[in-house]
Length: 354
Image (cartoon, rainbow, N blue to C red; front, side):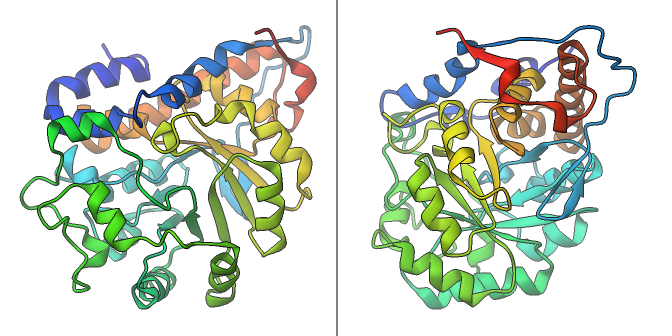
């Protein structure tokens, strides 16, 4: 019986190839940041309220003006085709079918047009900025034309950190899978090498605030900046036009001494104007963990690996089940905390205990 995200991971581990499972679950180097993200949730206790009338729980909210049924979105993750033949299209159908938002990775195995067409709700497009700005501009224009509702630009990957599990496995994409959004550009395959060498060849380590300014001017879509842990960086990004900041350390897959994102979200929220939304990802496996992030200042949270475990375990229906499970857990946590609406979640409900 699959009753939580950990159960889905156990099934996924049996069904995935070892290189695919290690790629999805792994972190950088010694995986310190990967562990920190998970451990951070045990650093807080909830000071729950009683006699609070929680007979009707409302988990609905909005992001960038778009209504969502719950404050849990799908983080951008690459290569869904390794988990299921339906790939990103199946994931997007499931996530949007549950009333949430799907964020599609640049490095998807399914073209953005197909994913957006098959989704029943908003799809955002995660963007890597390529050295070839013509390719970057084309991705932006395609996303806008296809109906993406925002661009989520990843800024914490000027180079790809070594993920040693992938090095041991000599990870590359299985036959038949390509980087579908790059078709026709000459950048749609890993060219027989690993993802790290691809990133070094194609992505731009000179990326700076000037490029964010360029991107905001280049598109009419809202721009979200993903990969921020410092309040001063968040403020600069907002000043240049970012509509939302994703507090993220790339799932523990980049700098292996970065802080747990849960420990960063409060200071980022405090530094920004209320009009700039703060989202957070990193290590969430339970609905109650999502609630902790919301108490500390996040408007919504993003989950990546849990979605992949659902997809690998049971395809599109597995993704739906993962999101339903997280919704039920969040509903339970809200009820037991004495809050019937998300607006009632606040810093005074949590204390750091370690």
